[in-house]
Image (cartoon, rainbow, N blue to C red; front, top):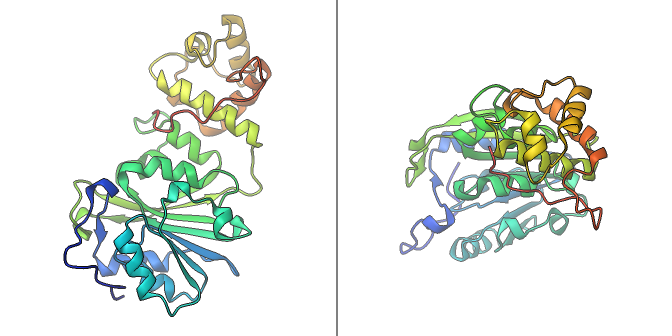
Length: 295
């Protein structure tokens, strides 16, 4: 797999954009081979950089949208792929690009990318906002992959684990050492495949409720659930209400949040919806997504 283009000699990786370029060609090829294509669909690459994956993605022959925030690199891709009608380059921040801008059917989009590690979680949650793509294949920091895949009762299990796995399946595809990048990051990486669940198991309102619940409980992850449901300002139930709600899902009040699996979080969230947890009493509207970094 050859490099798509060479930036000007004056171009240096920008720490502010989290630029670490993948230079291991064997790993580049393995990632492209792992891209799950949707017949008749579109591929969106986040942060193509110097084109480590782009050459292979262009060769797939499907509509390809490149979203690059670095102006110099975006212009380089425009020049390199000017003769390829199926390639579109957007000089944009991926956090400001909605899938509806890329295609009329977001469910036909496959997202691929070696994303900046300093904004990994915001990008993950942005991609999992409805309407969701068909597949997501991302290079992330190894710790983030571990957290997404962590089992209940382990130190890595938290709001990220629950937030992703209640709406999608997650699979580790490939482990990537730090030496595969230039400049070399201080951490190892992993490629993960995230497949949004269809049909969606939760309504939009239930997802909002669940995010409020997981954010609150993992902010106080060392506290027992009965106390958190009673005392957290975003939950604020009476003691009897908390005990009754937990009883409906078969959970003891002394249980701590990291002991609940994602399905139990969903069940508890649905029970609590009857108590209007996380809603503005004056408006009846659900709260926001909260802090996705809460662990």
